[in-house]
Image (cartoon, rainbow, N blue to C red; front, side, top):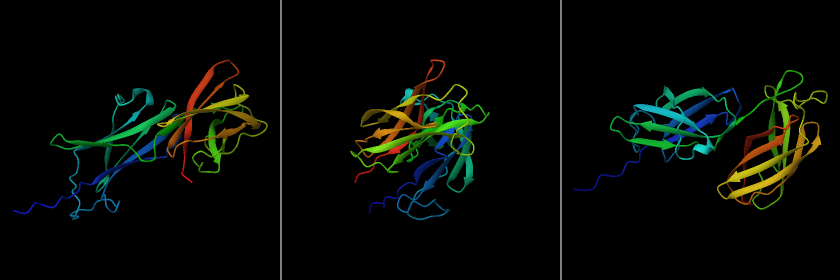
Length: 241
């Protein structure tokens, strides 16, 4: 007898929205089961792709220090449509989290995946003298740094709710740092830079990415009380020329 044609299983594609938040804010996690050829969500009775609804879909926010042994409490995602599961959670602690989703079936099988967008960045908020919360917003010039070419990394304190830059007559309760240290992490290695103050709550310095990967930016500075503050502030994506 002729061999049965191989029918590929639906791909598990997770996403997070937004991909960067302030500690205490909520984030939505979604999982879509899609046709691996077209990238479209599966439909009932669809030919050419195999899809059996899972018995459960869960997600975990895994801190980088836990590595592959993530022990975070699972978040249950509920069905939001055919082949779509969704849930949300509050991220309280600052850091860069790997979002790991797992779909399980009644026969004991399971499949796991992580969002292609990379880690979820949870930033700390700093209280301003006006009572508003402020966070650091990263930007580069050019917007997409080219591998092995120098780019400018800029960090600006902005209102966590409106995105407006820190006003000239407002400071942070613990004072503005004189400079920032930026450490960039990727599987290819680590790169460190100092960002010097170029304006009120604005810091910048040169960076060079040596691989076309997602680089996590970790910012550190010493506040007015002599306390070292360290946190993940965002990601940069290197591109080939």
